[in-house]
Image 1 (cartoon, one colour):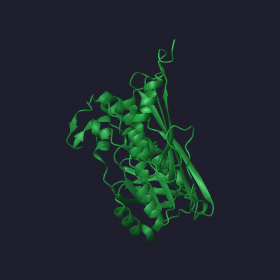
Image 2 (cartoon, rainbow, N blue to C red):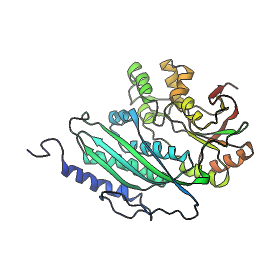
Image 3 (cartoon, helix red, strand yellow):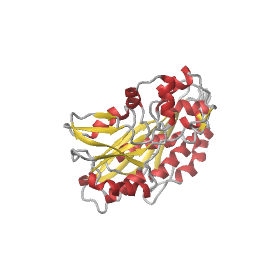
Image 4 (cartoon, rainbow, N blue to C red):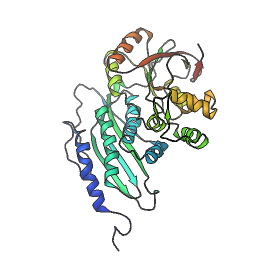
Length: 342
């Protein structure tokens, strides 16, 4: 027998590499030293101007949002979600992204589909200005259902030790700014699919007037990458804490940056909630606490700053093309989130 007869098509894998090369090379910058195909990615680290450079790393996947890509047979954006989930995480500690790597595993490799996935990853890397310097595509017959795959990403960034954002400087009276999300991002899809596709039997092709698009178009919208806006703010304003609102919503992510004796008081009417969340809450009869525990509710990232820096930060964010709102403040408490009605 041959490897191909066992289900692994090496030639198709090589063809996939050829198809993805143009996307990958489009992310390269002067720090990338090798071409595609080496055993490791080479990156020339520039630490000029830093006294104590610290590397910050992160890894993540996309979760069950992949099911939407399978159902829609649309694979050229899901890679951006993978990049965003990793890059936005290391951004929380003030790290400037250096490079990114990916891992794609599938049951039966189809070169065009893999190239589409990598295109989405490359698009995300270009937004984040993080070269895609390496990756792996694994064909694993019998391990995944036909047409399905999984992807994971690995990001590395750098920050001077004195500039690492930990949340330790957050104090009573500080302001919370919320950066808007592009929708569900990459979290809560198990609940969203259960409510919308199973309980209500919505079709992904259904045009929903309140969304201004089909349900499928809304649910497949890529996760936003906040590098440009946050890096601009860091140049001009001291950011004391950054929270990436991912799995666990407000309740799990925000306390991670709070000192023990402080709470984050969030005003619920201070930003516009995207309609998709209202639809899920309504048709699924989902309680408010569960919504804020599961979804980002329209806020993909939070920045904690001094009140004196509020106007400057909002101006910089707007100039960087980011929509942001003052959504709350820091108060004395027990390291938790308090949701308030105005």
